[in-house]
Length: 117
Image 1 (cartoon, one colour):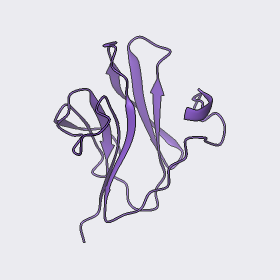
Image 2 (image 1 turned 60 degrees about the vertical axis):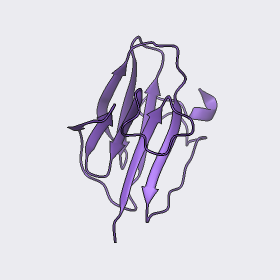
Image 3 (image 1 turned 135 degrees about the horizontal axis):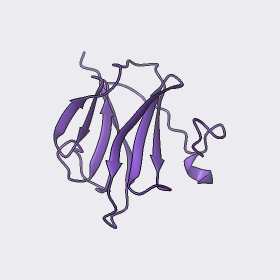
Image 4 (image 1 turned 60 degrees about the horizontal axis):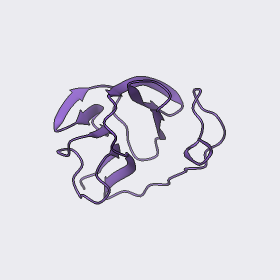
C-alpha cells in the first residue's frame, strides 16, 4: 500500500497538488522539503504515528517556515520574502489519516498555536 504525506503552507487555497505551485512550502514523508517543484534533502523521514509540527514565523523579514518531528525541531526550511500573498495550511495524505490541532498545547519552540497567534 502506498503511504504518503506532506505538510504545506501554500498561497493556493484550492489547488490539488501543492508541489508544483509557486509560493508553496512543504516537508514530506521522504524527508525532503519542497517548494515551487524543487525537492531538497531537509530532515528525517517520518511514518504514520509521527507528530509533525509546522511553524510559520511572520515576525521576521523574510518570514520563515520550520518543522519539528516528534517534538524535535528540525530547523528553518524556508525563508519567504514578502509578496503580499496569504498562506494557507495544508496536509496532503494518501492512505492515511491525520489529526490537526490549530489550538495547540501552548507555546512550542517559541511559537504560539495558530489560534493564539
